[in-house]
Length: 301
Image (cartoon, rainbow, N blue to C red; front, side, top):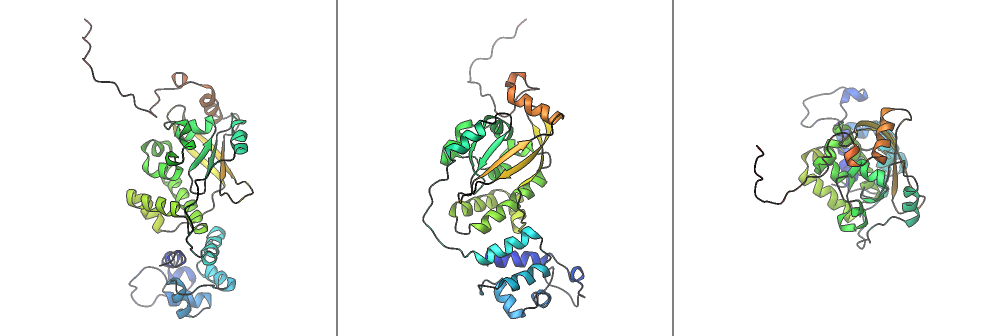
């Protein structure tokens, strides 16, 4: 089944006849609307809709897609995703070179030492960050890991597979939903991206929670919002985030974090910026200290 067919099937299964003003007759072997019912609501033939869901029909008109979006009660982001899936055929391409941060963008975020900033690639991999951005979201990783393509952290992979990152988010379920919704949008725009396909496959195998969320096909364009963090150095804080995209086709995004001035969260960010680990509240559990084996020192009397 194609991505378009999978999206239509999942959204159809999420609607009950009563949700759209229909009476349900007889026992249903599967949840949600039948194909015939959705086709009737959209004003297309059941045969045509079945072929569309099975990936056997291409080039659906915008009028048909709009009718399906209305019948499925899609929101703005979901409708845009539907159009993207219908208009973007999968095609193979040569393995692309690793993405890289432009020097000017790196200088820009470094010139803002009071604002945590992270530059993400088209698959949510970290292309660069400033010192405060690194310390806020991934202080347990080497700062220069983003400079080595083979070792670049990926924020979505960290969220599902890294214990430190999981502990960073008290509202982990909300963060996971947001991450998968955003990744679905990225995957819809780049169906030929082998690296992105491998990332989804890895997460599906290694994280049952990711697999369950991915199967639901959530879609949302996340460009702003708030996050609550439970940071190991400065405690709980709430930050707003804004995502800015350069006007090119690189797919890069710059993620900025801010805190409301005068709040405890702003004070926590300032402490994180200027404090050394020994000055911060409590021990720093980002990294473990490994001691070399040796004789046990004698007890003092």
